[in-house]
Amino acid sequence: MNAQRIFIAVIGFFFLLSSSPVLVKAKDMGGWQEDGEYNNLYQASELDKLKGNVQKVTTVVPMDGMSPGVAVILKDGDGDKIMIHIGPKWFLGDSIGIKRGEKVKVKGSWAEIDGKDVFMASKIKKGDFFELKVRLTKNGKPFWTMTEEELAKERASK
View: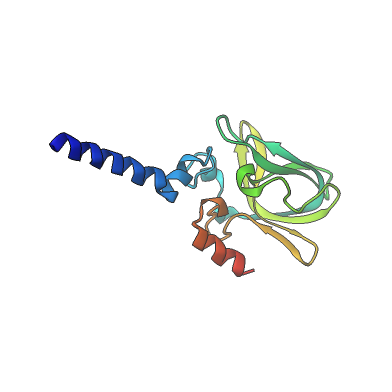
């Protein structure tokens, strides 16, 4: 009888773990988790702004072992090309609303990854009406790590 209760308790525990959205979400982050090595490179206290023309929208793997992310290569007013990391492809999808040749303003934080400077975006603005926000500017919390309720609140506050 005790063996049967233990078996049922173990099965119940695994069912609880597998149905928990927070645990499943954390497991599926692919290196993009809020407390991960990559995200810890983002420094909300050192925000910077860039503007320029989008040269290319591309896919990147920011660090070894991470799932693919979306990035743009921006050509600034000095003619420098800057790699801008936006977020995980599994969160952003295939179209981010930004195309080659468009003028954008980007807010975010500089980071060095594998000896190369990259810009980690928190917000990208295009024109007067388009804004792609992927992190909270006050603390750098990525939108892809938020609960559905937190994300809905942020999207409603635009």
